[in-house]
Amino acid sequence: MWFDLPIQVQDVTFKPLLETRYRFERRLDRDFDGDKADNRNESFLRLRPGFTFETKSGLSGRVVFQFLDNRVSLDNGAAGTSSNPKDLVEAFVTSATPVGKVTLGRQRFGIGNQRLIGALDWANSGRSWDAIRLQRGSVDAFVGRLTVNPVMNQEVTLGAVAYTGQHGNTSLIYKADKRPDPAATNWTLAHQWSKAQGKNQWAAHAALQRGSVSGKRLEAHALGVSVTMPADAQTTLSFEANLASGGSAANATARTFDQLYPTGHLFYGAMDLQGLRNMVQLGASATRKVGADTTIKLELHKFWLADAKDGWYGAGGGQNGAFRDATGKSGKDVGWEADLTGTKALGKDRTLGAGIGVFVPGSFVRSLAVGRDKTQVWGYVMVSSKF
Image (cartoon, rainbow, N blue to C red; front, side, top):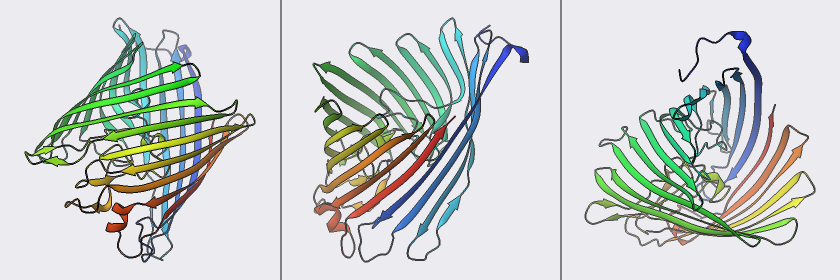
């Protein structure tokens, strides 16, 4: 049998797990309008107790619950928001079978560097799927339904097959979302590649997308390239360029790339104001290790719209407020973002993180902002532990 049952209690080894995390964020001029008081504080607490188990027959698994406390307060005295969701974020079993390693149940999933599919662990809720996954050699196949996500939508089904070889990771991803009417479906063929050349590390990604959205035929693409190089023994420099298509053609063809379910916080600025949709980006960063337990990173990003008649999309994939000009007269210059972030290990199990980001709006944002346009400022402090 694939899963050897029944199992005696004395044949099972359990290991308890506990993760805690608290993050405080402060954001100024969220809508870039200096005449509107929308400065805010955001507080995110996460508690994840659980356990792993393993049997003598080779069956293993993981069960993790999460308890969240999300709070937002506004400087203008308006009522804030609070929520305390509870979720079973992981509950799966894994076993070696004649066809490969099978994982069944609620699980987190990522492809490659999580640029298109990722666990989104920066968000307080994270992301997981009720799914079945098969891993055999260089092939990784997955099909499941979205069950835990910051914006919940249980009408999404995702299927993926990925192959990792000497030339990188190639994946074919199918997404079906029954929530809109008509339903949205698409196929994404993607490739991620990296190669060391001397002390430098080169990487590239490309994705081609076909399907339907809002009753239109979807034809979209995304691509990017980066290089990472050492400046000295403690400092690493990185340079990158990314593009994702946007807009619509006159023949009812949609061009806006569907970024799927990534961990976007890793790629396009710590402030999460930019996603992989209708965008052109140039970025540079410097990462420096200070001693044995501290890392500091400085990032600079410049953003444009790929299509001036389409909107500006954030890291979650949704449009940033009302920032869209269907005439295209507001141009493509979205703006600059600079981030300084750092982490420090506090012993073996705890980590302290902190950062600050500044977004300077470009002519596109300034032309659509009501009132006096302002620079947006964001910062955070986070303490996390895993036992």
